[in-house]
Length: 270
Image (cartoon, rainbow, N blue to C red; front, side, top):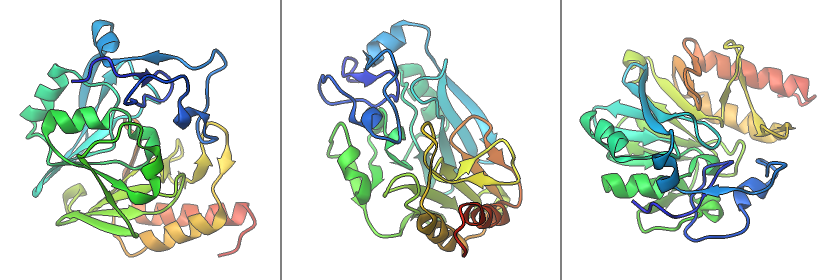
């Protein structure tokens, strides 16, 4: 592992070399804390109080993160598909015990990530399991540590494997992507959404935002197109970016209903 490469404390992005700024945090979809830019590295985290966290999140879905949470605090999801395990999104913390735990669950065949806020230590994860990282071409500019393992795709859909489809909704980031797992929820289908489609406290709806910390709403045309792209896909549950952030049932209708409500509230008719 590249123990001493700089990690942004606020967002968890790992950079290829030391620098004074974090472009991810300076973008209006994130923020630099009032106390200023701060840095750490994996060696420092592992020498402190951090440990890996691995917990079941749903049928065939295992959450992977850390205690305490690091950076933005998202957890990744290990999708235990028949075609091979896929890591959806990425958690910033990684150590040998966490690698061993994931190997015990069958390892990883590929990594796919929803948007740049969760790129974090993706190259570390890729090297640990010798697998590719699949990202949307529209977010290429946000890759902070280029690596030959990173593979870019373009367009609106990309088939990772049988029953595993990436959909570029363009919400939050131009490359903002969700993963549809046809066989999830015992065949009823699952949508793994990161915070491209945000699971909110009211599980009867989901949210769409351009910037979450700065409360900038997503553009109506983007939300309308996202709903259109998702409409043909069946899914019972929606799994967001946080521990236990799950819409357990009726996920497809929840997303469509939420898009209609959003467009109504911002005064944009469908």
